[in-house]
Length: 276
Image 1 (spheres, rainbow, N blue to C red):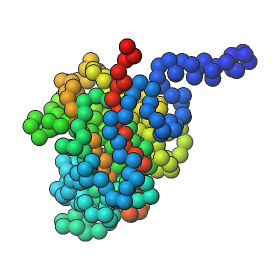
Image 2: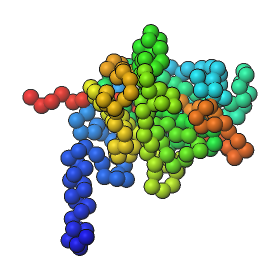
Image 3: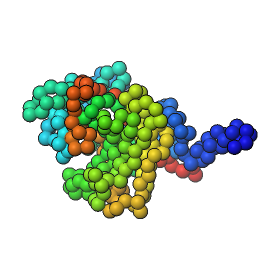
Image 4: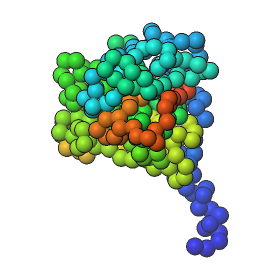
């Protein structure tokens, strides 16, 4: 490559990425203000003294959650709390009911449910074999039509045995479980537990796009999935930290507990109305 092209290539790359709405590789959004073309519809900045129960509902229980998970989810402050401007979801090794671990899972079901938009969170994941944090969405009609007919959008999942990879995944009828439609987002160096990262989906009619730190890494459309497209109705948001299960495997002697999933904010946007 000629020297002058070496000098111009970064500028050309930035202009091309700006035209497509993608950030330059490695660019991390500032986390302030609405992204271009979007307006804020709902958020939790976790600035209060405790979890805002007008925005989140804790789910509790220790029945394996369909994945043979080992934790008992509770609503106790030991497992879910707000501290120093962060949501803290903490997995602990302790007996609770019939389970040897505790953690938390919260959702916006019945409180905030939206069709289409940009769903974004800034998260620092925990680490360790058998540790499984997730930021995801379920169809608000799941109680009526069941899973996976209601649809599931996994914005970010990380399993401890893959510390430098997160996954964005879509589950629907014909493409669920280990046949789901997903893609990984690996880091060039380090592991996700080293720092905060911004995870988002932009969901519009007939298309869902996954981003990590502004980098597009997965796209889903009706023509790409092997079944019915069930993503044109309201969904709610979930945050949880599981321990063990089919996919991550169970903790072992290398797993250090407690582990914390830290969430700086969750923000939900709607498309801005086009200029008249």
